[in-house]
Amino acid sequence: MEVQAQVLRIINKKSKKEQRRKNVTRKVFSRLEMFEGAKSIGARAATIALAGAAVGIGNVLSSLIHSVARNPSLAKQSFGYAILGFALTEAIALFAPMMAFLISFVFRSHKKE
Image 1 (cartoon, helix red, strand yellow):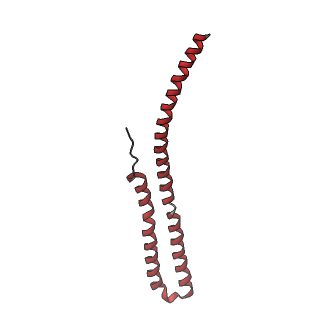
Image 2 (cartoon, one colour; image 1 turned 90 degrees about the vertical axis):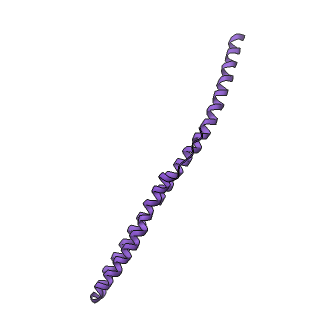
Image 3 (cartoon, helix red, strand yellow; image 1 turned 180 degrees about the horizontal axis):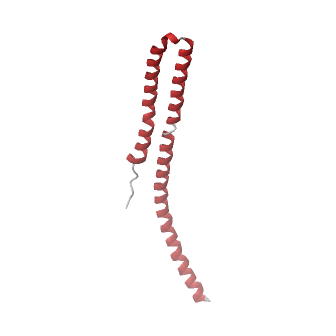
């Protein structure tokens, strides 16, 4: 009985040491995993701007339709302004994927080895 109790104590001491080691390495991995998760959330949040650009383009084109319906004689001038508004809105929309790619691929986590 005493021998079994001593063996169990030795096994428990070793397992506690191993658990401490695992906890330390787990903390390191959890920080890296949290960083990767934060990068993923940031990249997804950056792409939300694409929805805003779609709404902006819809507003520009609906305004063109309303202005031509009200005053057809200014259709050519209104169309030029609408194309300018469309181009500027689309240029803003191109920044969203660029930021998502920057967040995903440029900002790297530094693993300690």
